[in-house]
Image 1: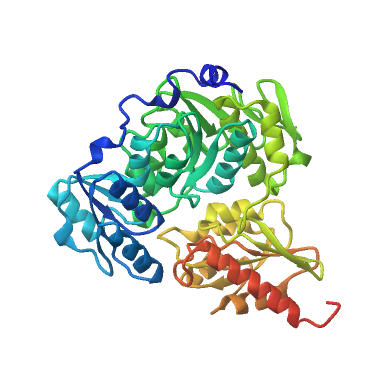
Image 2 (image 1 turned 90 degrees about the horizontal axis):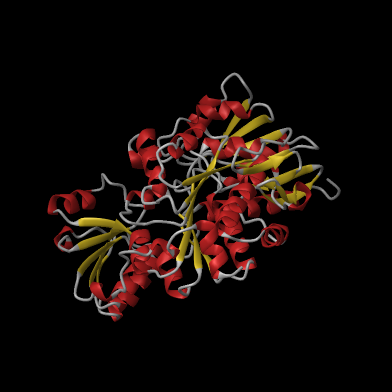
Length: 472
């Protein structure tokens, strides 16, 4: 695919670059970086390299944070950890990490001081010279973004997956050349802090209640998701799930060209599944037997990524090759063991009820391990998992809420550790069925991340199975 083909397919000036900076204008500017997670660390280093006057404030402390602080101090950056220092809230602009909610004390100080607040995504967009294709949604973002990056790379483009997926976007834009493209996963937190961020292709996968503790209400959460297309024009493309009413409501207000996708049909002027074939513009792109992802959620993710890639200008053959060679990601419906006719599945990435409902589709006789930090979400939606859920093991801070969700439906057993959870679930499992870790909650009550929680599940499965008599 050459440049003319790609620009002709999408239309307009490549990258929407009007008004984006060269980086020189940051020299001498006073910038406060709030938060020293991966994105904050990357932003501070990038700004320091551009001769900005950088200060960093971080509310927590850990070995990782202190090592980052040490490295930044060697580069001349002033860093405060183990509590936000309101004395440093004096800057021309603040780059705020996505995990810091708008009601946090440090945010109140920024607002009182009249300091402009942006996200690392906005900073990266201002500095980049490459294109962006962006993916957001309540569930499926990481898999879809990874698939999309693979499709772009398979077509011969210099492409990277970045953003909420792991690699900070600010690092990616320094690696990708002018004619490259970044597939960026953006969360509602990151979108809340954008001003001019404009992806050539934006993807909205779905919207379900999540992060109401951060946003304050479900309506605010939807509004943050909608910001992915707020700066798009008629030259750009908005790929949206036609099976999701909330997502489709967002599409009614965008200026870009709307391309619907579906995991169960072929929408008008879009793409989707006609039986076992993924169809786009009347052409079969691939067949279901070539998709390495399980269930209805996997078909949706493939349709969304393919829609974004094809509308950007990637050819059908490259899309097909990328899907066929794709390796499913860790902690997302990952089969970790099969024993005694029972399949043990790690879906630790499921941090809300919508994700857990999607995970149980297509399964049978499920013993569900759920719980964690509920994030202010009503867990009663989990009742819809019955059937195929036949028993529940409740774990963590929200175990009582999980139990209430299933009252009168199935037996719920509350436990205090992941090892105990797997042991109980294994004892209740039915041959031909599964033990599914799909928590519907965040992991931060017991673990540093969903990945750490998933690893704990996998270790517990191995340990429990090793304790069983030989032959079971």
